Image 1 (cartoon, helix red, strand yellow):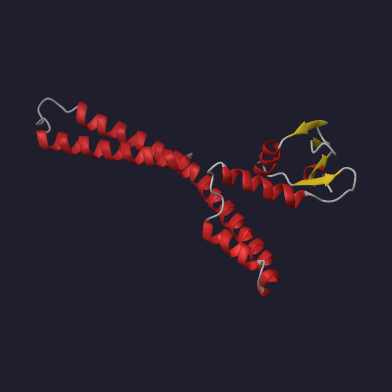
Image 2: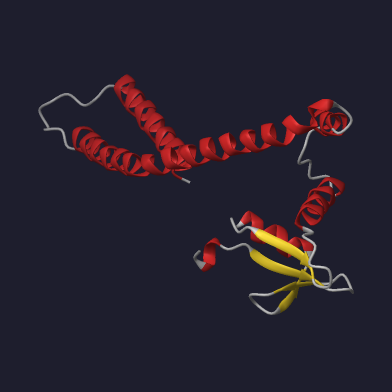
Length: 177
């Protein structure tokens, strides 16, 4: 297994300090949460007993975020989780949650792929908009002397079209980010 695929091993000392075995330094719960947000799996073990403490610490991270007002799970979900521990459905809940998060991750990555695939399209729209602006400038600013100047209404229409184009470009730029 490649190094990046191995879970990051964190050892908990008797003093309850957490030690990152890759970087040889102590870490906090917030550091561990950051590793996980960056896509890294972690494994936390007790140095003395060798017990796997990962689940306990991950629950603690969620609880700390909840206590700071950063709602991770709605009340009804927390209530249902507690309720599931006291019913026969306990065995189905972990599989259901795992499958739900798997589907969520898949749909999220597909959404990001779609947004990223729109990036070239957005650039194409920008190029098309530049061409349209050049065309409008040429049409509006360089009419022969013997032709009639554009009326006030056509100038207003032109300004409306320019504004709409600008709004569209702003929306596309937001999608690009």
